Length: 316
Picture 1 (cartoon, rainbow, N blue to C red):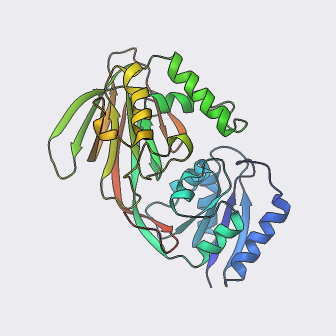
Picture 2 (tube, helix red, strand yellow):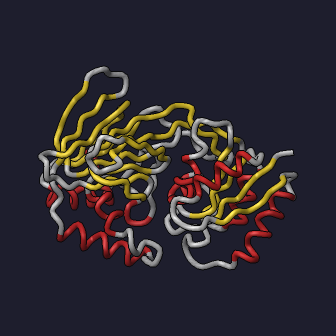
Picture 3 (cartoon, rainbow, N blue to C red):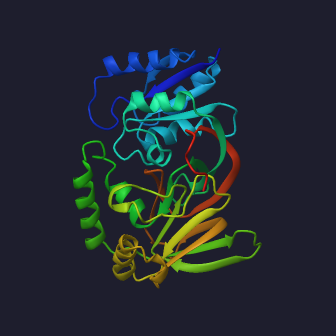
């Protein structure tokens, strides 16, 4: 008999009656013949340790219950193993869950996942300097998005108040940040898919997405990206940022990215973002979590993760 553990972030998204919801989640799985239990996170960066503990205690499936940040944390302990990951949307954006075609209702999502097959997918891997320019390297895997420039600066600016910021307030904060801050250029180098040659350019923003819909006002920025792709879909903007950033948003809304002279979208095997000059201050993020400042290096890890994907979701 299979064993599953729900790793629940009680602070994700809007307030909900967990005292009622969690037992109902367990009953839903037990009705499918799975032994299940729930563990609640106790703060940021605790989900990965809880995931490792659940695996040691015999769980073969972990359900990350929260937003994309919770999924991101749980995934760190699952990549490269035979443990299966399920996503239960309980956050605000829920980008990965939406791209998997899951219901925003947690109980309905669990019902969808209970009969879903485990599919092996590639994931992105980011290497970055733990000391913001120091020699010690750390790495994280991602399933939604990694970026440098404005999106990294936005995530950094929200570190203190992320939980309390609603969607409309988030948009207003992002607009204010992008209109008032100057974003310095940085060096971007990449290897196109199947090539051994590195190419180099200057950018003010770089975004590598594994999903085609980021949701809300940003839903059209990463169309064409896919969890199943064997390449990294990299979009970057050339300077000046005061022109290229608003043009990216407008061309995305109009569906004319291909006509934007400041935007380049490529399929790459690997790419790097490096600061220009010793005083450059360019922030980076992965799956909505701030990881520091440049430099970063990104590549794809094939056959990395067993993910529950409901049938009928196209493998583009």
